[in-house]
Image (tube, rainbow, N blue to C red):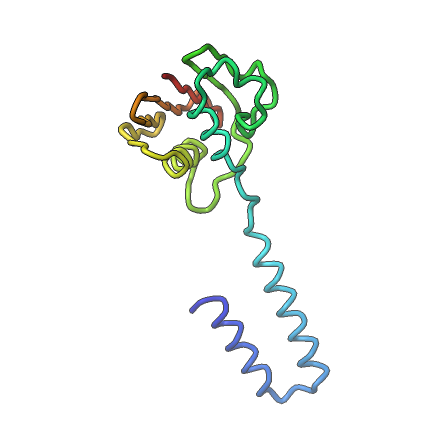
Amino acid sequence: MSFDQRARHAAKRLAQSPLSTLARAVLACTAAAFAITTAHAGETPEPPDICPALKAIVASSDFAQLRSETAARLPGIDAAQDCRTSAHVLDCHWRAHWQADGFVNDPLEELGADVAACLPNVVHDVNTPTRQHFIVKDDDRRVNVTASVVGQDELRLRITR
């Protein structure tokens, strides 16, 4: 029985009980407060949206120019020293600051799911507990995206052309 069904069932039984109106109102308020508290206790903040940054990075003609572009800044990376760039390589390390979102168990899986969902023409060809690899193809170029685990909650994202 779902939570909503249980709440409706409890409210119906409460309305039919021989308690006074005041007692029923107090019990109903207590049940509502408990339901609200329980519903919000399991909520975790939404993970940061990485799609705009991934799209900007993959679309870039020169990864070295990405240091100055705020649209290409990955969530969780505060300082420019967390990423090394050259014309054809972007290599970033950072600690994952978000929790699992209830559907995905760890930050690497979350990052892999974001890459697969955000980028057009993507092929996911490696999926291990410590490494995710993708190929993004356009007519004139191929971009490799590799996400890997470096340490506990520490990720590495390497994008090469």
